[in-house]
Amino acid sequence: MNIRIAAVGDIVLQYGDPDPYFVASAPVTRASDVAIGQIEVPHTTETDVTALTVPSPPSDPAHLRAMADAGYDIGTVAGNHVFDLGTKGVLDTLSAAHEAGIVTTGTGANLAAAMVPAIVERKGVRVGVLSFNCVGPRESWATSKKAGSAFVKVLTHYDLDDLNPGNPPQVYTFADRRSLQQMTTAIESLRSQVDVVVVALHKGYGHTPARIDDYEYEIAHAAIDAGADAVVGHHSHIMRGIEMYRGKAIFHGLGNFVTVTDALTPSPDSDSEELKAWARRRVEMYGFSPDPDMPGYPFHPESRNTAIAILDVDESGIHAGFIPCWIDGDAAPVPLARGERDSVADYIEDISRRAGLQTRFEWEGDVVRVS
Image (cartoon, rainbow, N blue to C red; front, side, top):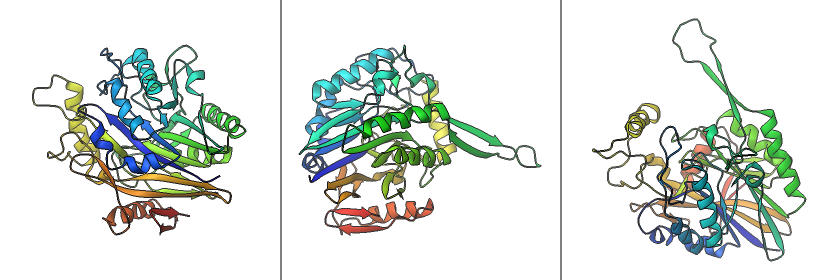
């Protein structure tokens, strides 16, 4: 009953040959018994955009074969870009993943389909995964009549507790009770069907180091309380801290993995006013401009620190940790052994501390264990 589960953050395969981006990390994911990755954007031939702000360009459906060839068994698909290219974009993505041999969860032709877990069995151990979008846009959420993602709705309260007009409010975030209950009910149901439950949450404030908001703790803790053995987060495109809650690991944000796109950087002759506005807001909100030497990687400099989450399952329980990785100059994630760019493991420990988490980190072979 010894199996290894590996999980990574966002995967975006927008252009070029995707295979080279997986070369360095594929030995890790192929050697794992179950590998999980977040399919972040639609893989479709559809070009009719439905997103209201900055849509993801369609990725070639055939590119998902590179993900499968790199050893990925499960694709979590609940996310903010899933409906950028409408119903056809959703269905094409799922079809391409299934044709490549990737089991999906978190998105479907309707809400019931989006809530169906991905279940695989390896060496007699049944592993179940659920995927939920905890951010907007609401247009991406599935309903009983509409394709889209499974979701947990998050509410935001602004408290203007200050005498001076124009001062920034205190912001509080918390989960909508009904959709949170929908999530926990699904986890409880899955718990009775499998040996290991992993819940993927698309959550977090983007492009900002260390920050973990109130709702993220609330939803992740609720997932563990309902029976999840681990929670993996993504969406913020930068690593977040690792929390231990009731002895279970919560990877609050696994950041980017293979994320190759030019969608966030307008060319000089771009006719997209929304994209130009986004590029300006990126500097104002997040305080960075992309590295001009990495045109296919338009993300925060610190996001090159990333990791593969590891769950080793044996008779004594589930042992969590991670393999640190560095996104190289070609935008490919490279796993690191102890002594190779130790700053990545140190960075993950540091952002955990800055978030107020008391997690312990210790190398064990090729993995940094968390407890």
